[in-house]
Image (cartoon, rainbow, N blue to C red; front, top):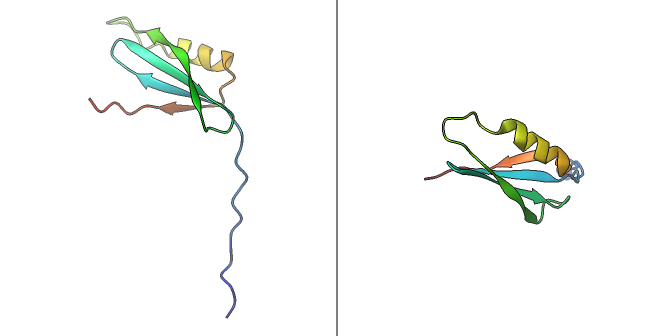
Length: 77
């Protein structure tokens, strides 16, 4: 019998990711280490009722923190 062919997994890419916890009053932010093992608080953005979502500010923060990706929290309540 021949052994089953194995497919090599691509190497993990080291990159910091910005975690976004989107709430009614605030948008919480956290930044991961390059391996994605640990996230540290990165502040929050206040939301104003009746105003547009703070997408531009989230992008500014991501650039300032050198984030290369995003992780969005899933609101369950």
